[in-house]
Image (cartoon, rainbow over all chains, first blue to last red; front, side):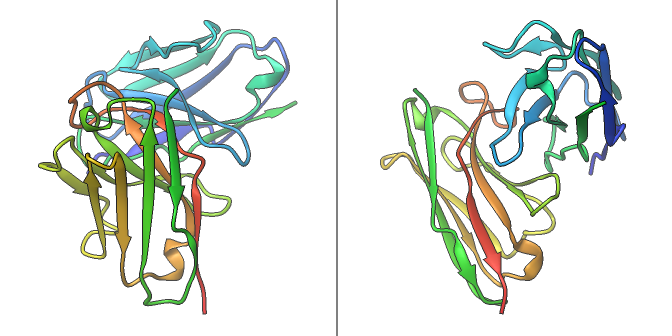
Length: 107
Length: 122
């Protein structure tokens, strides 16, 4: 099985900060990676798929990069609505493992 | 508007069974892979199972293989998860979720239901 390691697990930041979250796959997954945002008590929301493609309706301050085994989610200027948990997921083969999550907190 | 509505959650004793249902609307259900994803209280997301458009391809997480069965009824726009031999470790919110793209077997998830809580306790 492909394992997904996400870091950091918690991140403290201020509004306006540039934030970067990393996801590493235990073997190459090409560009088959998705990023999700989840707020407490709510279902996750797709932000990015195929590593770099922004889902319709997602603000352009979110971007994804990487391929193979190393991936990054960047929020260029953190907004109050962005304080949430973020998860990566590999989508190339079963089981479709999620990363452990990153909680972005207010500093 | 895409809508996914889960039902069937509740409290069940260890060793018991439960069947979750998910009603879909607002899109061509038969054209998308469907998934179940769960989240234990205070924990991260865990993919549970996926089923392709016709049911020809079915995948399970190791943690549920042999106990859970995913199925779909394209005529009824419905997805199901039969859960047997439940244990406390299966306690979670279970989400019904749509796979991105038409006739793609494995893909990211672009729409999620609101979730249904399954609690396993004596």
